[in-house]
Image (cartoon, rainbow, N blue to C red; front, side, top):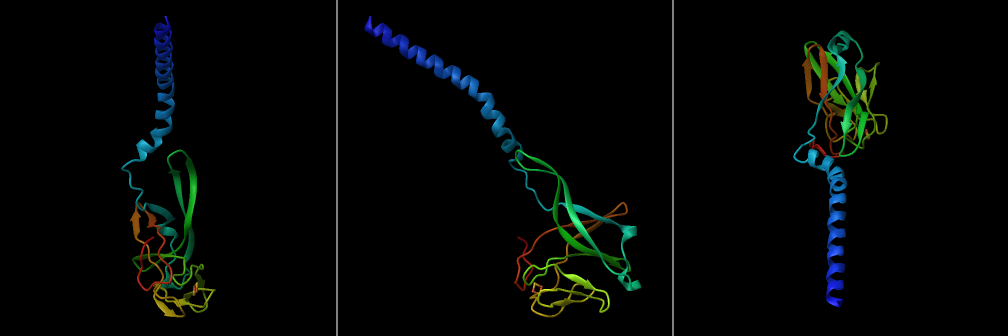
Length: 175
Ligand code: FES
């Protein structure tokens, strides 16, 4: 009699465990699904639109560069979707046929580089590093040129691959 009761208890325990597992499985799969979808996807560095080609100032004609925010749209992590995420800002312009896209982040300590219209050069307000119209280092403590970003022009739209680089190093190292 005792053995039968023990057996029934064990069977009931097994049954409850099996039912719990059946009920929990969809919830666990639901929670893990975003991770499964992200697996193997490398985010990479997307080319983001910054301006229309016909908007670009031409520095060789005495115009001033355009400072533009770089915004990624429809960014998703495993569980959340963000309609817009600001990545940073860039100086974008042309010199004749050549299109330039320079990060506004100063390579010295990360301040935001301005454009000096009188001197026609880029100047960092923090420690007075100066850069030519092509972003080449002229004076000051910056250890390298302004960080140029890869540019693409497609169907009249200018795209930049916005990246951040290690500060205070002579070489340009993406982080
Ligand atoms: S942060 Fe630009 S010169 Fe120091």
